[in-house]
Image (tube, rainbow, N blue to C red; front, top):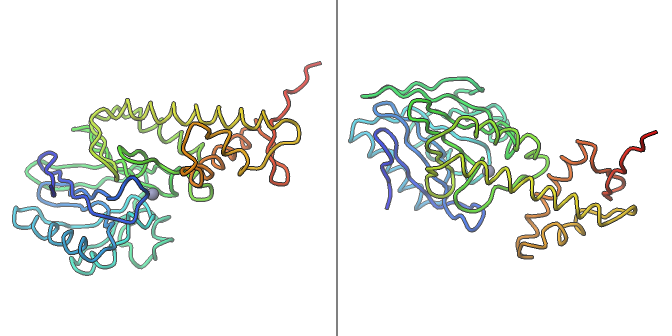
Length: 285
Ligand SMILES: [Zn+2]
Protein backbone atom coordinates (compact mmCIF):
# COMPACT_ATOMS: atom_id res chain seq x y z
CA UNK A 1 0.00 0.00 0.00
CA UNK A 2 1.16 3.52 -0.57
CA UNK A 3 1.97 5.87 0.92
CA UNK A 4 3.53 4.22 3.94
CA UNK A 5 4.01 6.25 7.15
CA UNK A 6 7.40 5.26 8.59
CA UNK A 7 7.46 7.73 11.47
CA UNK A 8 6.00 11.12 12.24
CA UNK A 9 7.19 13.47 9.50
CA UNK A 10 8.55 10.63 7.38
CA UNK A 11 6.61 8.80 4.67
CA UNK A 12 7.46 6.50 1.80
CA UNK A 13 5.90 6.44 -1.65
CA UNK A 14 7.32 3.88 -4.10
CA UNK A 15 6.63 4.47 -7.80
CA UNK A 16 7.27 2.26 -10.80
CA UNK A 17 10.37 3.30 -12.76
CA UNK A 18 12.62 1.95 -15.53
CA UNK A 19 15.17 0.66 -13.03
CA UNK A 20 17.41 -2.38 -12.86
CA UNK A 21 15.59 -5.70 -12.31
CA UNK A 22 14.68 -7.32 -9.96
CA UNK A 23 13.86 -3.85 -8.58
CA UNK A 24 10.86 -2.29 -10.36
CA UNK A 25 10.25 0.80 -8.24
CA UNK A 26 12.08 3.83 -6.90
CA UNK A 27 11.19 5.02 -3.40
CA UNK A 28 10.28 8.61 -2.79
CA UNK A 29 10.23 9.96 0.74
CA UNK A 30 8.44 12.94 2.26
CA UNK A 31 10.70 14.40 4.96
CA UNK A 32 9.49 16.93 7.50
CA UNK A 33 6.44 17.54 9.67
CA UNK A 34 5.26 20.93 8.43
CA UNK A 35 7.79 21.89 5.75
CA UNK A 36 8.41 18.90 3.53
CA UNK A 37 11.14 17.91 1.09
CA UNK A 38 10.15 15.27 -1.45
CA UNK A 39 13.01 12.91 -2.28
CA UNK A 40 13.46 11.43 -5.82
CA UNK A 41 11.08 12.83 -8.46
CA UNK A 42 11.71 9.52 -10.16
CA UNK A 43 8.91 8.10 -12.24
CA UNK A 44 8.53 9.03 -15.93
CA UNK A 45 5.29 7.04 -16.40
CA UNK A 46 2.01 8.98 -16.80
CA UNK A 47 -0.11 6.87 -14.47
CA UNK A 48 2.58 6.82 -11.78
CA UNK A 49 3.21 10.55 -12.17
CA UNK A 50 -0.47 11.21 -11.57
CA UNK A 51 -0.45 9.06 -8.42
CA UNK A 52 2.80 10.69 -7.22
CA UNK A 53 1.50 14.22 -7.71
CA UNK A 54 -1.77 13.30 -6.01
CA UNK A 55 0.23 11.98 -3.05
CA UNK A 56 2.31 15.17 -2.86
CA UNK A 57 -0.85 17.31 -2.97
CA UNK A 58 -2.56 15.19 -0.31
CA UNK A 59 0.20 16.12 2.14
CA UNK A 60 -1.16 19.68 2.25
CA UNK A 61 -4.42 18.31 3.61
CA UNK A 62 -2.63 17.00 6.69
CA UNK A 63 -0.66 20.18 7.30
CA UNK A 64 2.53 19.15 5.54
CA UNK A 65 3.61 21.59 2.86
CA UNK A 66 6.10 20.50 0.18
CA UNK A 67 8.80 23.17 -0.20
CA UNK A 68 11.29 21.43 -2.51
CA UNK A 69 12.22 18.35 -4.50
CA UNK A 70 15.49 16.59 -3.78
CA UNK A 71 17.35 14.15 -6.05
CA UNK A 72 20.19 11.93 -4.79
CA UNK A 73 21.74 11.66 -8.28
CA UNK A 74 21.15 11.98 -12.00
CA UNK A 75 20.29 8.42 -13.06
CA UNK A 76 17.01 8.36 -15.02
CA UNK A 77 15.29 6.13 -12.45
CA UNK A 78 15.79 8.96 -9.91
CA UNK A 79 15.00 12.11 -11.91
CA UNK A 80 12.73 10.79 -14.68
CA UNK A 81 9.72 12.74 -13.45
CA UNK A 82 11.40 15.97 -12.44
CA UNK A 83 10.12 18.17 -15.28
CA UNK A 84 6.46 17.24 -14.87
CA UNK A 85 6.53 17.18 -11.06
CA UNK A 86 8.37 20.51 -10.71
CA UNK A 87 5.93 22.15 -13.12
CA UNK A 88 2.77 20.63 -11.66
CA UNK A 89 3.69 21.35 -8.05
CA UNK A 90 5.66 24.54 -8.67
CA UNK A 91 8.55 23.23 -6.56
CA UNK A 92 12.29 23.95 -6.89
CA UNK A 93 14.79 21.10 -7.23
CA UNK A 94 17.70 20.84 -4.78
CA UNK A 95 20.60 18.60 -5.70
CA UNK A 96 24.35 18.49 -6.38
CA UNK A 97 26.15 20.38 -9.14
CA UNK A 98 27.17 17.11 -10.84
CA UNK A 99 23.48 16.25 -11.17
CA UNK A 100 22.68 19.78 -12.39
CA UNK A 101 25.36 19.46 -15.10
CA UNK A 102 23.79 16.28 -16.44
CA UNK A 103 20.07 17.03 -16.25
CA UNK A 104 20.24 20.75 -17.14
CA UNK A 105 21.56 23.48 -14.82
CA UNK A 106 18.42 25.57 -15.31
CA UNK A 107 16.36 22.89 -13.57
CA UNK A 108 18.25 23.16 -10.29
CA UNK A 109 17.38 25.96 -7.84
CA UNK A 110 19.74 25.06 -5.00
CA UNK A 111 23.11 23.32 -5.27
CA UNK A 112 23.90 21.25 -2.22
CA UNK A 113 27.37 20.33 -1.02
CA UNK A 114 28.69 18.07 1.72
CA UNK A 115 27.97 19.57 5.14
CA UNK A 116 24.95 21.66 4.08
CA UNK A 117 21.90 21.45 6.29
CA UNK A 118 18.27 21.22 5.30
CA UNK A 119 16.11 22.47 8.18
CA UNK A 120 12.47 21.56 8.04
CA UNK A 121 10.02 23.19 10.38
CA UNK A 122 7.36 21.08 12.02
CA UNK A 123 5.92 20.06 15.29
CA UNK A 124 9.46 18.73 15.66
CA UNK A 125 12.21 20.53 13.73
CA UNK A 126 14.08 18.15 11.42
CA UNK A 127 17.63 18.90 10.39
CA UNK A 128 19.02 16.78 7.57
CA UNK A 129 22.73 16.97 6.91
CA UNK A 130 23.88 16.63 3.32
CA UNK A 131 26.54 13.96 2.71
CA UNK A 132 28.29 13.81 -0.64
CA UNK A 133 28.86 10.11 -1.30
CA UNK A 134 30.19 9.52 -4.84
CA UNK A 135 31.17 6.06 -6.09
CA UNK A 136 27.90 4.88 -7.66
CA UNK A 137 27.44 8.24 -9.40
CA UNK A 138 29.34 11.54 -9.26
CA UNK A 139 27.84 14.00 -6.84
CA UNK A 140 25.59 11.34 -5.27
CA UNK A 141 24.00 12.76 -2.12
CA UNK A 142 22.72 11.08 1.02
CA UNK A 143 20.79 12.85 3.79
CA UNK A 144 21.48 12.18 7.45
CA UNK A 145 19.26 13.03 10.41
CA UNK A 146 21.41 12.53 13.53
CA UNK A 147 18.67 12.59 16.24
CA UNK A 148 16.72 9.63 14.91
CA UNK A 149 19.89 8.34 13.19
CA UNK A 150 18.08 8.03 9.89
CA UNK A 151 19.86 7.91 6.53
CA UNK A 152 18.38 8.59 3.11
CA UNK A 153 20.73 6.24 1.28
CA UNK A 154 19.90 6.78 -2.42
CA UNK A 155 21.71 4.15 -4.47
CA UNK A 156 24.59 3.52 -2.04
CA UNK A 157 22.87 0.33 -0.89
CA UNK A 158 19.61 -1.39 -1.77
CA UNK A 159 17.47 -3.95 -0.05
CA UNK A 160 16.39 -5.20 -3.45
CA UNK A 161 18.59 -5.72 -6.51
CA UNK A 162 22.25 -4.76 -6.69
CA UNK A 163 24.20 -1.54 -6.94
CA UNK A 164 26.11 -1.40 -10.20
CA UNK A 165 29.38 0.52 -10.37
CA UNK A 166 30.00 1.58 -13.95
CA UNK A 167 33.49 2.92 -14.63
CA UNK A 168 33.35 6.55 -15.73
CA UNK A 169 30.11 7.05 -13.86
CA UNK A 170 31.19 5.37 -10.67
CA UNK A 171 34.47 4.42 -9.03
CA UNK A 172 34.99 1.32 -6.91
CA UNK A 173 37.71 2.82 -4.70
CA UNK A 174 35.60 5.87 -3.94
CA UNK A 175 32.44 3.78 -3.51
CA UNK A 176 34.07 1.51 -0.91
CA UNK A 177 35.47 4.51 0.98
CA UNK A 178 32.02 6.12 1.06
CA UNK A 179 30.40 2.87 2.24
CA UNK A 180 32.89 2.89 5.13
CA UNK A 181 31.95 6.48 5.89
CA UNK A 182 28.23 5.61 5.96
CA UNK A 183 28.98 2.57 8.13
CA UNK A 184 30.72 4.86 10.63
CA UNK A 185 27.51 6.89 11.11
CA UNK A 186 26.04 3.94 13.02
CA UNK A 187 22.60 4.61 11.52
CA UNK A 188 19.50 3.09 13.09
CA UNK A 189 17.49 3.19 9.87
CA UNK A 190 18.61 3.45 6.24
CA UNK A 191 16.08 4.30 3.57
CA UNK A 192 17.25 3.13 0.16
CA UNK A 193 15.91 4.17 -3.24
CA UNK A 194 15.06 0.55 -4.02
CA UNK A 195 13.45 -1.96 -1.66
CA UNK A 196 12.26 -1.88 1.93
CA UNK A 197 13.62 0.25 4.78
CA UNK A 198 16.74 -1.26 6.33
CA UNK A 199 16.59 -1.55 10.16
CA UNK A 200 20.09 -2.89 10.62
CA UNK A 201 22.14 -0.70 8.27
CA UNK A 202 25.50 -1.64 9.83
CA UNK A 203 25.03 -5.31 8.99
CA UNK A 204 24.11 -4.39 5.41
CA UNK A 205 27.08 -2.01 5.00
CA UNK A 206 29.38 -4.72 6.36
CA UNK A 207 27.89 -7.24 3.95
CA UNK A 208 28.30 -4.87 1.00
CA UNK A 209 31.91 -4.09 1.87
CA UNK A 210 32.77 -7.78 2.45
CA UNK A 211 31.00 -8.76 -0.79
CA UNK A 212 32.95 -6.21 -2.86
CA UNK A 213 36.27 -7.19 -1.32
CA UNK A 214 35.53 -10.90 -1.88
CA UNK A 215 34.72 -10.12 -5.51
CA UNK A 216 37.91 -8.12 -5.83
CA UNK A 217 39.76 -11.24 -4.62
CA UNK A 218 38.07 -13.32 -7.32
CA UNK A 219 38.93 -10.76 -9.99
CA UNK A 220 42.54 -10.74 -8.88
CA UNK A 221 42.63 -14.57 -8.90
CA UNK A 222 41.16 -14.61 -12.44
CA UNK A 223 43.83 -12.16 -13.60
CA UNK A 224 46.51 -14.30 -11.96
CA UNK A 225 45.16 -17.44 -13.67
CA UNK A 226 45.55 -15.69 -17.03
CA UNK A 227 49.32 -15.81 -16.45
CA UNK A 228 51.97 -13.72 -18.15
CA UNK A 229 49.94 -13.24 -21.34
CA UNK A 230 47.06 -11.74 -19.44
CA UNK A 231 43.41 -11.63 -20.48
CA UNK A 232 40.89 -9.02 -21.51
CA UNK A 233 37.97 -7.98 -19.35
CA UNK A 234 35.30 -9.90 -21.30
CA UNK A 235 37.26 -13.15 -20.94
CA UNK A 236 37.76 -12.58 -17.22
CA UNK A 237 34.02 -12.31 -16.45
CA UNK A 238 33.12 -16.05 -16.64
CA UNK A 239 36.04 -16.83 -14.32
CA UNK A 240 35.59 -14.05 -11.77
CA UNK A 241 31.80 -14.44 -11.83
CA UNK A 242 31.63 -18.25 -12.18
CA UNK A 243 29.38 -18.27 -9.10
CA UNK A 244 26.71 -16.07 -10.74
CA UNK A 245 24.21 -16.72 -13.51
CA UNK A 246 25.48 -15.98 -17.05
CA UNK A 247 22.42 -13.75 -17.49
CA UNK A 248 24.04 -11.41 -14.95
CA UNK A 249 27.35 -11.26 -16.82
CA UNK A 250 26.63 -8.24 -19.02
CA UNK A 251 26.25 -6.14 -15.83
CA UNK A 252 28.99 -8.08 -14.09
CA UNK A 253 31.32 -6.79 -16.81
CA UNK A 254 30.79 -3.23 -15.51
CA UNK A 255 31.60 -4.25 -11.97
CA UNK A 256 34.60 -6.25 -13.13
CA UNK A 257 35.89 -3.20 -15.02
CA UNK A 258 35.40 -1.11 -11.88
CA UNK A 259 37.33 -3.67 -9.82
CA UNK A 260 40.11 -3.79 -12.45
CA UNK A 261 40.37 0.01 -12.46
CA UNK A 262 40.82 -0.07 -8.67
CA UNK A 263 43.44 -2.84 -8.85
CA UNK A 264 45.33 -1.00 -11.61
CA UNK A 265 45.22 2.25 -9.62
CA UNK A 266 46.63 0.38 -6.62
CA UNK A 267 49.46 -1.04 -8.74
CA UNK A 268 48.38 -4.64 -8.18
CA UNK A 269 47.37 -5.31 -11.80
CA UNK A 270 48.99 -4.14 -15.02
CA UNK A 271 46.93 -3.08 -18.01
CA UNK A 272 48.44 -3.19 -21.50
CA UNK A 273 46.55 -2.96 -24.80
CA UNK A 274 43.31 -4.06 -23.18
CA UNK A 275 44.90 -7.03 -21.44
CA UNK A 276 45.24 -7.38 -17.71
CA UNK A 277 47.91 -9.34 -15.89
CA UNK A 278 49.08 -9.54 -12.35
CA UNK A 279 51.99 -7.34 -11.44
CA UNK A 280 54.96 -9.50 -10.52
CA UNK A 281 56.17 -9.09 -6.96
CA UNK A 282 59.12 -6.82 -6.77
CA UNK A 283 62.36 -8.79 -6.41
CA UNK A 284 64.18 -8.01 -3.25
CA UNK A 285 67.94 -7.82 -3.44
ZN1 LIG B 1 21.67 5.05 -9.70
